[in-house]
Image 1 (cartoon, rainbow, N blue to C red):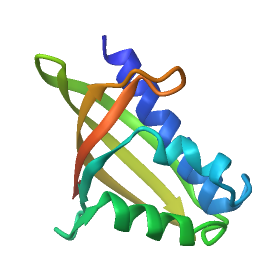
Image 2 (image 1 turned 90 degrees about the vertical axis):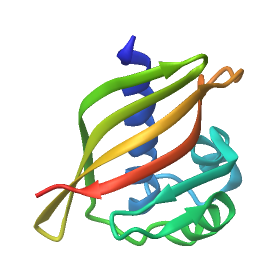
Image 3 (image 1 turned 180 degrees about the vertical axis):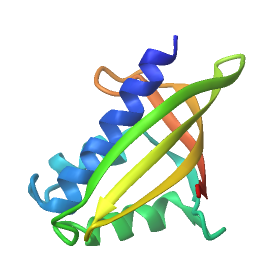
Image 4 (image 1 turned 45 degrees about the horizontal axis):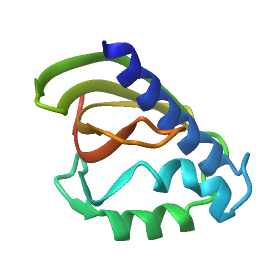
Length: 132
């Protein structure tokens, strides 16, 4: 059951690496793997406690194309915590390496099924917390 969640989480973070490193072009088509599965009401709470809504996140991410050429991201320990109807609450660790420094955070994501041929899950909310 958790495999589909892990697949989606890894897919999105692979997109981030491709976007930040400029491996994909800065086009609407190349940006769709991020934008399509995000709920219009999506919000992310950063490890610093800042909440960013979908529109602001889309704008910010669009402007970050090819700005982090040496980033590496990997995902660990995807765990389904709760399922309530069609809503799933999943946690995972996100590890990043850039400029020789490694950081990690634990994230909680809320998913809902999405009737889309490429993106079977809709991202509703993410909350990130730094790991030591």
